[in-house]
Length: 297
Image (cartoon, rainbow, N blue to C red; front, side):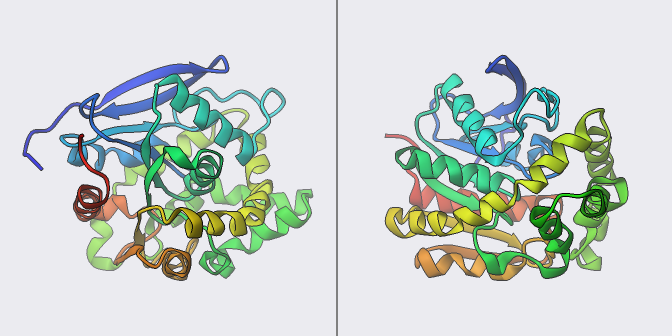
């Protein structure tokens, strides 16, 4: 890695007539790392990571439809399911001419990225999971209780606790929980205020409730994801905030069951590990990709 800081470009591309916003940095001919964010954030979560890897890799981080600065058509005009977001992500890669890439998956980005990998395994060079789950044991019992209730039956009574998850306090809880005291002042309050402002926009209630209600479709695919790991033996790195109560550390360790060569690193932080440990995560990714994904022919 050099000390040169390459610029991050903020661009948009039309996919199915929807504007998809994305960040991009790095040489055009470098190996691609596709960064897929989770709930309730956007490509904003990668703001500290991208410059640290852009000298050697082409990094591309889209905002999922309905998130960040991408278009947010109403739930009446777009079917907000994980299957549709995964299909749209593939079309995004096609629009940018990406035919081979490593995946960075976090939270919602995990089922979106792994659905893409199931459909197009030949395109995936490696997977980096940062609190991106694919195992039942990775689901924190308390955090998932209201979501499981909504999945089982969507009613006004089961919707209300889930609404609280995307409130300012609910989002702040995701950033702060599990972060040791010595790292708390590394958390940027602007991050959860940024997410909360975007989550408060008109139409977000129906969009986000619909997606959360659909999360059970990802549970149903866990066996298929695990079979993909076993058959592909895809190079795999987990960099996981061990204090995360949404996706607990057992979810990181579980990858070794199907990927014996998986490299697992538990870091002393929470769900949004990049907020406190971007330098350490960048170093782990740079080392991993240099060994497992050749830089250039």
